[in-house]
Length: 170
Image (cartoon, rainbow, N blue to C red):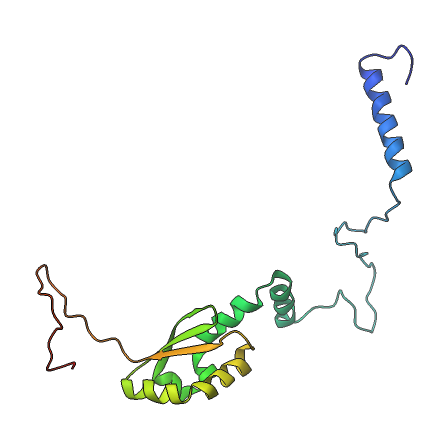
Protein backbone atom coordinates (compact mmCIF):
# COMPACT_ATOMS: atom_id res chain seq x y z
CA UNK A 1 0.00 0.00 0.00
CA UNK A 2 1.25 3.47 -0.78
CA UNK A 3 2.43 5.42 2.28
CA UNK A 4 0.26 8.52 1.85
CA UNK A 5 -2.80 6.86 0.33
CA UNK A 6 -6.23 7.91 1.48
CA UNK A 7 -9.80 7.54 0.29
CA UNK A 8 -10.20 5.94 -3.14
CA UNK A 9 -6.47 5.14 -3.51
CA UNK A 10 -6.47 3.26 -0.19
CA UNK A 11 -9.60 1.29 -1.16
CA UNK A 12 -8.07 0.38 -4.53
CA UNK A 13 -4.84 -0.80 -2.86
CA UNK A 14 -6.75 -3.00 -0.36
CA UNK A 15 -8.86 -4.49 -3.19
CA UNK A 16 -5.79 -5.27 -5.30
CA UNK A 17 -4.07 -6.94 -2.32
CA UNK A 18 -7.15 -9.09 -1.61
CA UNK A 19 -7.36 -10.18 -5.27
CA UNK A 20 -3.67 -11.10 -5.30
CA UNK A 21 -4.07 -13.16 -2.10
CA UNK A 22 -7.11 -14.99 -3.50
CA UNK A 23 -5.38 -15.83 -6.78
CA UNK A 24 -2.30 -17.09 -4.95
CA UNK A 25 -4.20 -19.41 -2.58
CA UNK A 26 -7.17 -20.58 -4.69
CA UNK A 27 -6.61 -23.55 -7.01
CA UNK A 28 -7.15 -22.91 -10.67
CA UNK A 29 -10.60 -23.96 -11.91
CA UNK A 30 -11.52 -24.17 -15.52
CA UNK A 31 -14.86 -22.56 -16.07
CA UNK A 32 -17.44 -24.44 -18.07
CA UNK A 33 -18.27 -22.90 -21.40
CA UNK A 34 -21.87 -21.79 -21.13
CA UNK A 35 -21.69 -21.67 -17.33
CA UNK A 36 -23.88 -24.61 -16.41
CA UNK A 37 -22.46 -24.65 -12.90
CA UNK A 38 -22.53 -28.44 -12.74
CA UNK A 39 -18.86 -28.84 -13.64
CA UNK A 40 -19.51 -30.43 -17.02
CA UNK A 41 -17.97 -28.83 -20.03
CA UNK A 42 -20.45 -27.85 -22.70
CA UNK A 43 -19.65 -29.37 -26.05
CA UNK A 44 -19.67 -27.28 -29.20
CA UNK A 45 -20.14 -28.17 -32.82
CA UNK A 46 -21.93 -31.11 -34.41
CA UNK A 47 -22.52 -34.22 -32.35
CA UNK A 48 -21.46 -36.72 -35.00
CA UNK A 49 -22.79 -40.20 -35.73
CA UNK A 50 -22.57 -41.72 -32.23
CA UNK A 51 -24.65 -41.14 -29.12
CA UNK A 52 -24.08 -37.78 -27.51
CA UNK A 53 -25.44 -36.08 -24.37
CA UNK A 54 -26.83 -33.31 -26.61
CA UNK A 55 -29.09 -35.72 -28.48
CA UNK A 56 -32.83 -35.47 -27.82
CA UNK A 57 -33.88 -37.58 -24.85
CA UNK A 58 -37.03 -39.61 -24.30
CA UNK A 59 -39.47 -37.84 -22.00
CA UNK A 60 -39.93 -40.92 -19.83
CA UNK A 61 -36.18 -41.24 -19.29
CA UNK A 62 -35.86 -37.56 -18.39
CA UNK A 63 -38.79 -37.80 -15.96
CA UNK A 64 -37.44 -40.94 -14.30
CA UNK A 65 -34.06 -39.23 -13.78
CA UNK A 66 -35.83 -36.19 -12.33
CA UNK A 67 -37.96 -38.30 -9.97
CA UNK A 68 -34.86 -40.18 -8.81
CA UNK A 69 -32.79 -37.02 -8.37
CA UNK A 70 -35.50 -35.32 -6.30
CA UNK A 71 -36.22 -38.39 -4.17
CA UNK A 72 -39.83 -38.73 -5.33
CA UNK A 73 -39.79 -42.52 -5.88
CA UNK A 74 -41.83 -43.34 -2.77
CA UNK A 75 -44.57 -40.70 -3.31
CA UNK A 76 -44.79 -41.64 -6.99
CA UNK A 77 -45.19 -45.33 -6.13
CA UNK A 78 -47.86 -44.50 -3.56
CA UNK A 79 -49.72 -42.40 -6.12
CA UNK A 80 -49.59 -45.32 -8.57
CA UNK A 81 -51.54 -47.45 -6.10
CA UNK A 82 -54.43 -44.98 -6.24
CA UNK A 83 -54.12 -43.80 -9.84
CA UNK A 84 -53.74 -47.20 -11.48
CA UNK A 85 -55.72 -49.37 -9.06
CA UNK A 86 -57.28 -51.41 -11.87
CA UNK A 87 -53.91 -52.18 -13.44
CA UNK A 88 -52.36 -52.98 -10.05
CA UNK A 89 -54.95 -55.48 -8.75
CA UNK A 90 -56.83 -56.49 -11.88
CA UNK A 91 -60.13 -55.39 -13.37
CA UNK A 92 -62.44 -57.76 -11.45
CA UNK A 93 -61.09 -56.84 -8.03
CA UNK A 94 -60.99 -53.14 -8.97
CA UNK A 95 -64.70 -53.21 -9.89
CA UNK A 96 -65.58 -54.32 -6.36
CA UNK A 97 -63.05 -52.41 -4.26
CA UNK A 98 -61.24 -49.10 -3.99
CA UNK A 99 -58.19 -47.90 -2.06
CA UNK A 100 -59.07 -45.39 0.65
CA UNK A 101 -55.79 -44.35 2.28
CA UNK A 102 -52.14 -45.33 2.51
CA UNK A 103 -50.23 -44.44 5.67
CA UNK A 104 -46.90 -45.87 6.83
CA UNK A 105 -47.09 -48.76 4.38
CA UNK A 106 -50.60 -49.79 5.47
CA UNK A 107 -53.22 -49.63 2.71
CA UNK A 108 -56.89 -49.38 3.65
CA UNK A 109 -59.20 -50.89 1.02
CA UNK A 110 -62.98 -50.57 1.02
CA UNK A 111 -64.94 -53.39 -0.62
CA UNK A 112 -68.32 -52.92 -2.26
CA UNK A 113 -69.97 -55.58 -0.09
CA UNK A 114 -69.15 -57.64 2.99
CA UNK A 115 -68.84 -60.74 0.81
CA UNK A 116 -66.17 -59.04 -1.32
CA UNK A 117 -64.42 -57.84 1.83
CA UNK A 118 -64.20 -61.46 3.00
CA UNK A 119 -62.87 -62.56 -0.40
CA UNK A 120 -60.26 -59.81 -0.41
CA UNK A 121 -59.13 -60.76 3.10
CA UNK A 122 -58.58 -64.30 1.84
CA UNK A 123 -56.63 -62.93 -1.16
CA UNK A 124 -54.58 -60.46 0.91
CA UNK A 125 -51.28 -62.32 0.45
CA UNK A 126 -51.56 -62.51 -3.33
CA UNK A 127 -52.79 -58.89 -3.47
CA UNK A 128 -49.69 -57.75 -1.60
CA UNK A 129 -47.50 -59.65 -4.07
CA UNK A 130 -49.32 -58.07 -7.04
CA UNK A 131 -49.00 -54.59 -5.57
CA UNK A 132 -45.29 -55.14 -4.85
CA UNK A 133 -44.75 -56.37 -8.41
CA UNK A 134 -46.46 -53.31 -9.92
CA UNK A 135 -45.34 -50.44 -7.70
CA UNK A 136 -42.30 -51.75 -5.85
CA UNK A 137 -41.44 -53.49 -2.62
CA UNK A 138 -42.09 -51.90 0.80
CA UNK A 139 -44.61 -49.42 -0.60
CA UNK A 140 -47.52 -51.44 0.82
CA UNK A 141 -46.62 -53.80 3.65
CA UNK A 142 -50.04 -54.47 5.16
CA UNK A 143 -53.67 -54.43 3.99
CA UNK A 144 -56.68 -53.35 6.01
CA UNK A 145 -59.83 -54.48 4.22
CA UNK A 146 -63.30 -53.53 5.34
CA UNK A 147 -66.78 -53.64 3.89
CA UNK A 148 -68.99 -50.72 3.00
CA UNK A 149 -69.79 -48.22 5.72
CA UNK A 150 -73.28 -48.53 7.20
CA UNK A 151 -75.48 -45.47 6.83
CA UNK A 152 -75.66 -43.09 9.74
CA UNK A 153 -79.01 -42.91 11.52
CA UNK A 154 -78.17 -39.76 13.44
CA UNK A 155 -79.91 -37.18 11.26
CA UNK A 156 -81.82 -34.12 12.34
CA UNK A 157 -81.52 -31.71 15.23
CA UNK A 158 -82.97 -34.15 17.82
CA UNK A 159 -81.86 -37.71 18.20
CA UNK A 160 -82.18 -40.43 20.75
CA UNK A 161 -79.16 -42.35 21.96
CA UNK A 162 -79.25 -46.04 21.29
CA UNK A 163 -78.19 -48.80 18.92
CA UNK A 164 -80.37 -47.70 16.00
CA UNK A 165 -82.89 -49.83 14.14
CA UNK A 166 -82.21 -53.46 15.01
CA UNK A 167 -84.27 -55.05 12.28
CA UNK A 168 -81.98 -53.81 9.47
CA UNK A 169 -78.41 -54.05 10.80
CA UNK A 170 -78.21 -56.55 13.59
